[in-house]
Amino acid sequence: MGDDVQYKGWVIEARSLESDGGRWRPYAVVIIHAGQGTREHYVSALPDIVCDTEQDANAYAVAMAKKWIDDQG
Image: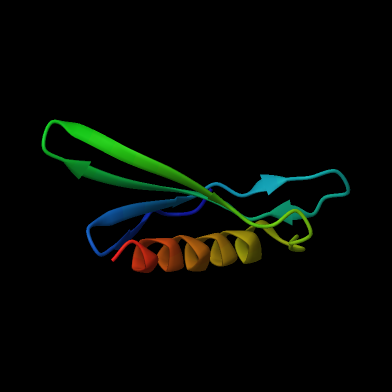
Protein backbone atom coordinates (compact mmCIF):
# COMPACT_ATOMS: atom_id res chain seq x y z
CA MET A 1 0.00 0.00 0.00
CA GLY A 2 1.34 3.41 -0.92
CA ASP A 3 1.20 6.73 0.85
CA ASP A 4 -2.11 8.44 1.44
CA VAL A 5 -2.97 11.27 -0.94
CA GLN A 6 -4.72 14.47 0.19
CA TYR A 7 -7.16 15.89 -2.39
CA LYS A 8 -9.74 18.66 -1.87
CA GLY A 9 -10.08 17.88 1.83
CA TRP A 10 -10.38 14.14 1.27
CA VAL A 11 -7.81 11.45 2.06
CA ILE A 12 -7.32 8.84 -0.64
CA GLU A 13 -5.94 5.47 0.46
CA ALA A 14 -4.86 3.30 -2.46
CA ARG A 15 -5.47 -0.35 -1.50
CA SER A 16 -5.13 -2.23 -4.76
CA LEU A 17 -5.63 -5.95 -4.50
CA GLU A 18 -3.46 -8.68 -5.96
CA SER A 19 -5.49 -11.13 -8.04
CA ASP A 20 -4.73 -14.64 -9.16
CA GLY A 21 -1.87 -14.59 -11.63
CA GLY A 22 -0.01 -11.79 -9.87
CA ARG A 23 -1.90 -8.92 -11.51
CA TRP A 24 -3.38 -6.03 -9.55
CA ARG A 25 -6.92 -4.64 -9.37
CA PRO A 26 -7.17 -0.88 -8.67
CA TYR A 27 -9.05 -0.12 -5.45
CA ALA A 28 -9.15 2.92 -3.16
CA VAL A 29 -10.95 4.31 -0.15
CA VAL A 30 -11.78 8.02 -0.02
CA ILE A 31 -12.28 9.48 3.46
CA ILE A 32 -13.38 12.86 4.78
CA HIS A 33 -13.61 13.86 8.41
CA ALA A 34 -16.60 16.13 8.97
CA GLY A 35 -17.94 17.32 12.29
CA GLN A 36 -18.27 14.39 14.64
CA GLY A 37 -18.03 11.70 11.99
CA THR A 38 -16.09 10.22 9.16
CA ARG A 39 -17.45 9.54 5.70
CA GLU A 40 -15.90 6.80 3.55
CA HIS A 41 -16.51 5.73 -0.01
CA TYR A 42 -14.97 2.72 -1.75
CA VAL A 43 -13.85 3.06 -5.37
CA SER A 44 -12.90 0.06 -7.48
CA ALA A 45 -12.15 -0.39 -11.14
CA LEU A 46 -14.31 -2.36 -13.51
CA PRO A 47 -13.54 -6.10 -13.35
CA ASP A 48 -11.62 -6.09 -16.64
CA ILE A 49 -9.16 -3.41 -15.44
CA VAL A 50 -5.99 -5.02 -14.11
CA CYS A 51 -2.43 -3.76 -13.87
CA ASP A 52 0.91 -5.52 -13.97
CA THR A 53 2.24 -3.86 -10.81
CA GLU A 54 0.84 -2.66 -7.50
CA GLN A 55 2.30 0.79 -8.20
CA ASP A 56 0.41 1.09 -11.50
CA ALA A 57 -2.81 -0.15 -9.91
CA ASN A 58 -2.49 2.32 -7.05
CA ALA A 59 -1.87 5.20 -9.48
CA TYR A 60 -5.01 4.18 -11.40
CA ALA A 61 -6.96 3.90 -8.13
CA VAL A 62 -5.92 7.41 -7.04
CA ALA A 63 -6.98 8.82 -10.42
CA MET A 64 -10.37 7.08 -10.11
CA ALA A 65 -10.81 8.41 -6.57
CA LYS A 66 -9.97 11.97 -7.65
CA LYS A 67 -12.58 11.73 -10.41
CA TRP A 68 -15.15 10.45 -7.92
CA ILE A 69 -14.36 13.38 -5.58
CA ASP A 70 -14.63 15.86 -8.48
CA ASP A 71 -18.00 14.38 -9.46
CA GLN A 72 -19.33 15.05 -5.94
CA GLY A 73 -19.29 18.79 -6.67
